Image 1 (tube, protein in one colour):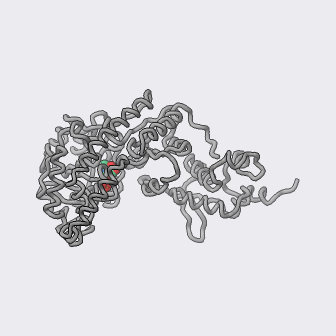
Image 2 (cartoon, protein in one colour):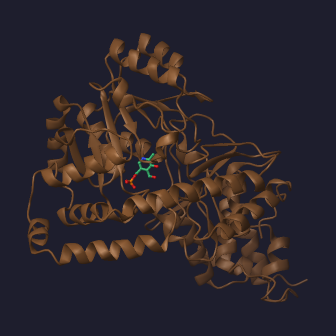
Image 3 (cartoon, rainbow, N blue to C red):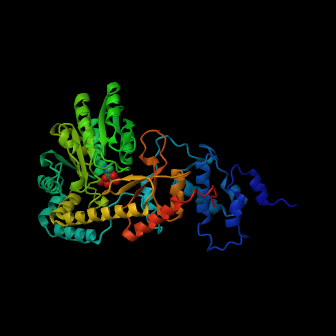
Amino acid sequence: MTITLRDKAQARCSWLPDLDAWRALHHPSSNRSAADNKTPRYKALADALAAAIQQGELQPDTRLPPQRLLADALEVTTGTVTRAYAEAERRGLVEARVGSGTYVRVVQADDRPDFYHLMAEGGDGSIDLSLSLMVPCPLRLQSLHQAMQQVAADPQQLAAALAYQSERGQPRQLQVFADWLQRLGVKVNPEQMIITDGGQHGIFLSLQALLAPGELLVSDALTYPGVIAAARELHLRHQGLPLDEEGLDTHALERLCQQQRPRAVYLMPDQNNPTGRVLSPARRQHLAELAERYDFWIIEDAVQFLPPEFRLQRLADLAPQRTLYLFSSSKILAGGLRVGLIAAPAGILPRLMAALRAHCWMAPPLMVALTCAWIESGETDRLLRWQWQEVQARQQLLGEVLAGQVYSRHPAGFVVWLSLPGDWRAGEFVRAAADAGVRVLAAEPFCVGNQAVPRAVRLCVSPPAERELLKEGLLRLKHLLESPPQGRAVF
Ligand SMILES: Cc1ncc(COP(=O)(O)O)c(C=O)c1O
C-alpha cells in the first residue's frame, strides 16, 4: 500500500474535519454534482471549525493546523484553507498571530459578536429576521426625498444646517421634537431635552453623565446589547436581575439595594428587547419608590416605541426628578439618520451637555434639520401609523404560524423571544436556520455578565419587505422547531 502525501498530511494534522463526510461532499472523486453541494469548500471548512469550537473539540488557544498541511490533508488548495481561516476569523472564532499561526480565540465571558457583521452578511438572499429594523415601506423613501428637497430649497435652513449650534440643538428643532412627541402622547419639556446621535448615543451619554467607572448599573438580566457594550466601555459594574411576566423583579432589586448601591437602573419598561415583556404598573410604582428611597437614577429607554394605546405610565412621569427618557427616530424613520433625544431633569442637563461636547460637540445639524423637516411634513405620522398596524398584523401572523411554540413578545413590538424545544441549542439553531436561509440571533448577546445562556433565539418581524417573506421565514423556522437537531453532521 502506498502512502500518499494526503495520508502523511492527515497523520500530522492536529485537527481534521470528519473526513468521511468531507470526502462524500467535497472530494474531487465524489459523485455528488456541484449543483448538489452549493456551499463553497472554504465556507464548509469554516463551518466545520465553528462546530468543533462550539463542541469543545477545539479548545481556546489551540493552534490550528498549518494551512499547507491541512490543504494537503483535504486535497484542496492552500487558498481554500486561507479563506476558511479568514472566514473563521471574521466570525470571531480564531485569531491569526503574526509568525505563530492561527489559534482558537480565547473568548472572554462578556465577549459579544460584532453586530456590523450581521448587517454586512445581508444580501445573500436569506430572509433576515435578526435585527430590529423599521418595516421597509416605499413611503419612507418618498417622504425622505421630499424632506430633503424642502431643506435644500430653503437658504435659511441650509445656512443653519451648516453652522455650529448649541449642543442641545436649536430651540426651534427641540420644539419640533417636543410637539411631535406630544402628538404621539408623550409630554416632554423642550427646555429639558438634548438631541443625540441616536438611541445608542443616548444610552452612552446617560451612563457617562450618571455613573463613574466601577459604579453599579442594574438592568434586566436579558437586555439590549448596546447597553451591555456601553457599560463595558465605561468600566461600570453591570448586574442583571431576573425578569418575569411583569418585567424586572423589583423585589430582587430591593434586596440588592439593601446590600449595594446601584447608581442607575436601565430599563425598557414598555417592551423589553429581547423578550417583549412589559413592566407592570405595580412594578413601575415600586421601582419609582425604590429610586427615591435608595437614591438611584432611572434610564427609561423608549426607542422601541409603541402605539399610545399600548404604552403604560412612563417612569419619567412617576419619578420625574430621577428619570432620563430616551427616544430615537431609528425605529420609526431610519436608523441611518442617527437622530435621537434625551429628556432629562434640568439638574443633569449640564452633565449631559458636557459629555455630548466631549463626544461630538453636537448631533449633526444637517441630519437634525432633515429629520425636523420630515416631521413637520406630517408624513412621519402617516408612516408611523402604517408601521404600527403592519407590525401588529405581522405579530398576528407569527402567532398563527408558530402556534404551539413557546415564545414571548409584545403584540405591537418588533421582537420575539423564542424558546427552543427538545435538544436544540441556540447556536446550533441559529446555524440550522441560516442553512435554511433564515437569519435569527442567539440569546448570548442579550445576556448580562456570565449567566447561563438561555436556550432561546430572538427574531424580529419587522425587517422583511413583505409579509409573505416573513411568513416563508417563519414556516422554515417552524419546520426546524419541529425536527430534532441534525446530529453533528457538519458538511
Ligand atoms: C432598546 C433599544 N435602545 C436603543 C437602540 C439604539 O437605537 P439607535 O439605532 O437610535 O442608536 C436600540 C436599537 O435597536 C434598541 O432596541
